[in-house]
Amino acid sequence: MYLFLIFVQRNKFYFKIHIFVIIQKIIYICTPQNMKNMNNVLVIGASGQIGSELVLALRNKLGGNHVVAADLRYPLAAELAEGGPSCKIDAIQAQEIADVVKKYNIDTIYNLVAILSATAEANPMLGWNIGMGSLLNCLEVAREYKTALFTPSSIGAFGPETPADKTPQDTIQRPKTIYGVSKVAGELLSDYYFKRFGVDTRSVRYPGLISNKTLPGGGTTDYAVEIYYAAVKGEKFICPLKKGTFMDMMYMPDAIDAAIDLMEIDPARLIHRNAFNVTAMSFDPEIIYNEIKKHYPNFVMEYDINPLKQSIADSWPNSMDDTCARVEWGWNPKHNLTSMTEDMIKELKKNYKK
Ligand code: AKB
Image 1: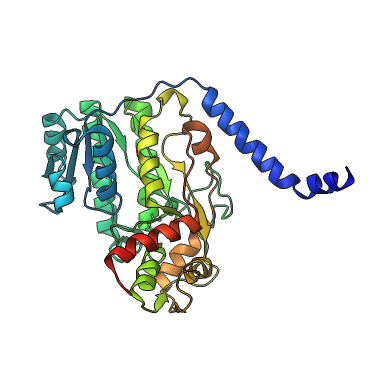
Image 2: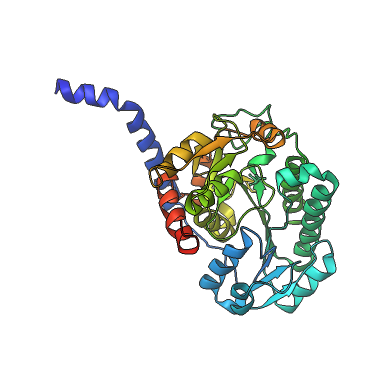
């Protein structure tokens, strides 16, 4: 009995966490569901890091003909062009979006058009014009044609004044990058269109996304993808961020689930809309390096700090609290650093031999 009490005492913290998670799940399961159907979906930015995987997942679920893949870069890669309808859309031209929405009787738009943080910082006007221009056009089309709209936000929507650890859902948002400023403006505008016009806008604040299919471009979290490529190719990795720089991260299959699950959930369940904190893991360069070294013991990483990326990373959270997403729409990522690393290496090995 005495030993049992010591065991309970030592593990009290973990018991509390388990009970909390179980209560969340019970609340979620017991609340009646009235799923929102997506019938015909338009993905704008289909060739990008999220889009190229989201289109395939949606086609798998809804059928190829029900998912239109659109991008400025046209024609699309064979995998996207062959599985269903595809077209060229310049998201800065509202009429081009409206024409496709009309033609295919679209009820849900995924607007994935964005210039990532580091690139946007090098050309702020471009970052703002592309991010806000495409969003405003999508919001207007969504209002006119009564479609739902998903537009990702980011951990970039937070800034140095935000609590860095377990960043709450509702907190200070004073980002110091043009990317972050446009993400906060996007969250506010999307909430505005919901409240003022009833447009069904929904969004998540994505952390760094790690994919084995499409490379990101110009983001602050890109190192966490590039490090896997270096390891599998047998190259030395030069890390642009300092040891101790913690950021939230997520494996792409979880990011795709988030984008689909949120758009399907009964709207009556949503207290928040734009945008939900979602995360799957938080690590610094040393932690991911050591995880990869379990597979490649001779893998070498050196540091050459990129001051722009470092300053951006320093202004972002170390780890977010995503309880609201878990409670309101059942967010529950499947991958942690260990399972992601195993899968990344397995998949990349198919294309790159050491
Ligand atoms: C970036 O690094 O800019 C993006 C993001 C976290 O939004 N990956």
